[in-house]
Length: 185
Ligand SMILES: Nc1ncnc2c1ncn2[C@@H]1O[C@H](COP(=O)(O)OP(=O)(O)OP(=O)(O)O)[C@@H](O)[C@H]1O
Ligand SMILES: [Mg+2]
Image (cartoon, rainbow, N blue to C red; front, side, top):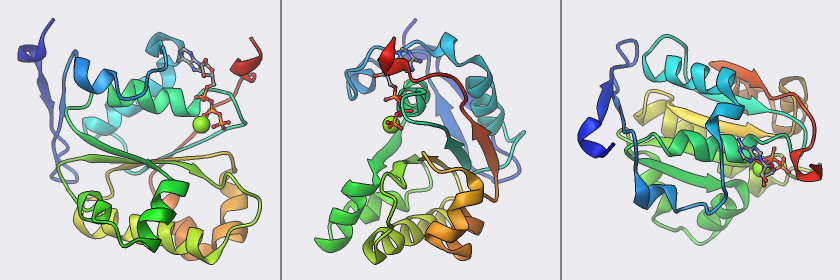
């Protein structure tokens, strides 16, 4: 099936449409990790419900190392027409270098994905500033459409990042990825 079979998902509650495509070969190549969305049916169903406006954005995914959180986000980007993908390290660098990456993060036509939130046990002020800025841009310009990924549980976020960031990260749909470390299989 080609992109001609693209179908538009409306998000009436937020007034933003995400275009969903059956195959996006160019985008599929961005992360060269083999992935199988059929291994995460519940999360993919939640994601589709979000795209249709049946659940609240943002999507916060948490779980132990190796359960498949990052690969799950690649599965989601495979069916998105356009998206922005970054992780916290990249984002901090963009903050320090004043990169124009930030301009893209406020784009309301793209789903924004921020991975590796809380990869470290100690959160620096640069980490916190970068996450807060990212979340504020999505909140103010993009109807909160975003996917946030962390090893930390929602309970740990306020202490690590403060209540204001926790409020922004956890105000939508929270999804716990359980299971074993798939790197060990
Ligand atoms: N849906 C999937 N399809 C195929 N392989 C998968 C899938 N999910 C996980 N894997 C395998 O498990 C490995 C670890 O997955 P992933 O990198 O997504 O874990 P993670 O939860 O993001 O870990 P970390 O918290 O350390 O970042 C992948 O490199 C891949 O080999
Ligand atoms: Mg990961």
